[in-house]
Amino acid sequence: METKARQPQISPLGYALATLPYSDSCVGLLRAWLGHCEENHSLCTTNRYVVLPTRVIDVWPEDGSGHPRLFVSQGMRGRYTTLSHRWGNTPMMKTTMSNFQAFQATISLHSLPATFRDAVLVTRKLGLRYLWIDSLCIIQDSPEDRRREISRMSKIYESGCLNISALGASDSHSGLFFRRRNEEAINIPEAIAGCAHRGFAIGFRPCSTTLQLCMENNELGSRGWVFQEQFLAPAIVHFGHGMMFWECKSCRASEANPVSPVPYDPLKNLLDEVAREQSLLIECQAHYVAWYVVVEMFSDKELTLASDKLPAISGLAQRFQRTFDTTFVAGLWYEDLHRGLLWSRYEPFGYRKRKRIPNTPSWSWISAYHRITHTFELIGEVRWQNHPVQRVELASDVIVLDVKISKTNVSSPMKECVGFSNSRAKLFERLIGGPMCSYNQMVLDI
Image: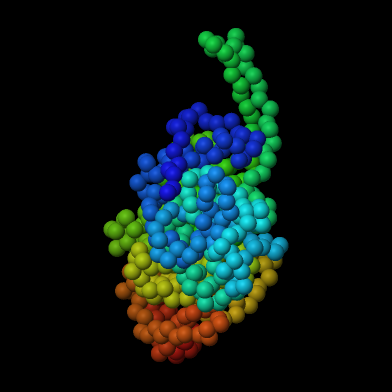
């Protein structure tokens, strides 16, 4: 049986930062954040019992008297946490075909790298039983298992009740818990404070300690896979070097400001907001606009393997497809191809141009190694390469004559490609207001 995470109400005056991040005060604050979210946030889904992922880490028992193990869920329901971490360049513990059976029996807590071990401890302290870690819950040397589980990323991160973000960790061995600098406090005596009973202390800390700055200054925030994970998760606790930060779909908070009116990142809530504004969809296809904003952000993130570009955003694409009932084709949407094709590489002065990523279609943004931009104004007049273009408001303004989806080699990360055959340049003549080129036929293929 799981125990519910409940603590007394958070003080509106805030908490002093604890020197040790795994202190009772830090654990109590995290339990209070999660409990408050479960009880008061209708937008969040942190309290649901869901079908567990294919495999999870069973972290039980809560008192730490036993060791975790890899658990094959077989459709069981429960609540679980997920871990977002940077793989790094050091060797990392992974589940493989050779150790799969042994891990189902037990995984010694002491053998786990520090980041994984700390995630187990956090999950236990929250009274939860299950934890999902990509390198342990996916059989890493099985291409079939990797493909199957990556295709379920959207559900895995959306359904978890809390994402544990190893914001301050450079790899799986760094851990979640970093000793903080003990800031000096100034004691205000009773006579000055005017207090009836006693004086009080005022502490000082750098004003630049914000989640946004921590994300910008830590490598985890620059990773492509993590972008998707944290976009999908209903609630996140970030363990940074200086303090813990909380995000859910209703608010943001930190140890320095435990009760904050600052809302959840609006970009992460973009798809939810657009889905509720049905009239907006009809007027300007705002759901596609939302996708282009997300793609531009994602394209600026780093991936160890360039071939992971499409898999690393596939979870977001699945959520988009489920929400808006549209057709995903190699990073673009069939129903909005007239705008989806209007992207370009971001090439600042001195930028070294690179060829496209192998086995990707040159006409899709997924072929670009680095950041891309969409060369039209997202709402308003459409522009192409700085030339004014006839405004396209609805998909019916452009007719796609023929789209064919074909399968590629099984070993390729590109599972689908799109070819436009027999589509004469009039498709673009109409969009741009004049002939695009001298070709009588345009074929977009890989």
